[in-house]
Length: 304
Length: 252
Image (cartoon, rainbow over the protein chains, first blue to last red):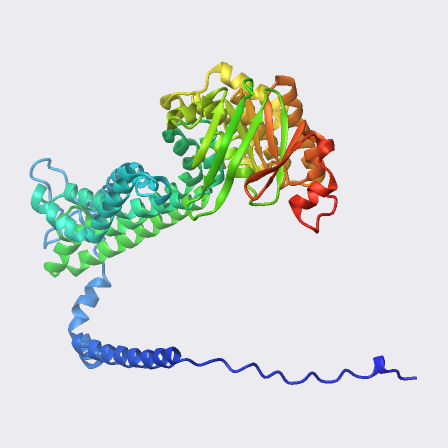
């Protein structure tokens, strides 16, 4: 006997949601959205015009680059320098053969890596203590803390605002060309970057251990040391390694403005139309950056 | 109450947002006494503990530790904290630091800056820390990191850290709220037993009325920032509990 329970369920009534109220504010907002979209599109078109974007110029310029492409495809892998006749050039001082493109570039690449290492180390050492002063959670509540917070934040912002290349140009003027101005430029810019990252790591610590250490009657210095540092140290190491990674690539560019390293030679080769040597240069940079990238991500994985 | 370890008179605290967390609280605890503090969330229990050891500065009234005003200067509040151990609901162990070093951090108030910076502990300090760990029966875990331990084990490490201060008072802020009932008893057994053995006074904020009655010599109940009831566990009747927890109070 079919009972009422066994009957197929009735389809549920269609739900019509209540009308969303539409206020004057909503209408104004919609109008504003469309106006902004239109303005943005106009600006986008203007940008293409201003930057002289032209596919025809790009394609027709291809034939002029043939010679360059040929040289770039034939990198100079010489270990010793040879003259036009193919004879090995001997150094006038030592009587030994003069080093060719590969050993010269490897030596310069090494200088680039060393520059980035020193620059990164200096920035880590300086931004480490400063970052505690730039952490909101450690400085709020006292007038001197507020002053420290705001001034260190300001310093970090200023340092970050200067691109390293501009800093390098300034330092080349100050201390002359070579790797030293490059180191200074990298260090200064990285202080701003690392200081910001470090202080944000400090701001996101778990406060429970910090309160527990405070409850033991520890001084403020030891509260930071015992309660905060163990929490942020792995992040500090990871940020520093990442910064080193960035600085290696950055220091190649710095060479172009005379701040030492392989970038200096790369710039020279291009200016002198020695594209075979420039090609070797690109290859060495590519290999070095790839190896260091693997190395630093391997290290970071183990640190995290 | 001249022999009291802690004595508050007319204690009041208003948070910057205007919340009146404590209002004219007269509270005391004698040496070696175990006091359970109960009350609903927000009744002022945690605020009381933090006023006692100077982590929070009261807006009215006074807190005296062994007859001296805790909040006379920030330096004195810090000195008081050295003699007052504290454990927390969330344990507050420092991550990535070994259990033994976490216990030794209990000495942070006593060591100088340089010894602290290099984690340079004396042999006596290490022996003390190991003794504290063995008293809460967790000695064999000394080399582990906190996150390798269970919640109950972590709270025992926190008790060892507080004991490593060689305190006169142990403040326990909802020490077992994050633990299951069985583990809660293990942890409270350890804390109360050691306090009794060493004559340490203990103030425990508890959510469980039955635990509060069982472990406390005396019960203090808070309601809306005021002391609503004070007396022996036997005097805490169902009528009083209904007044504290509201009509829906059923024995828990």
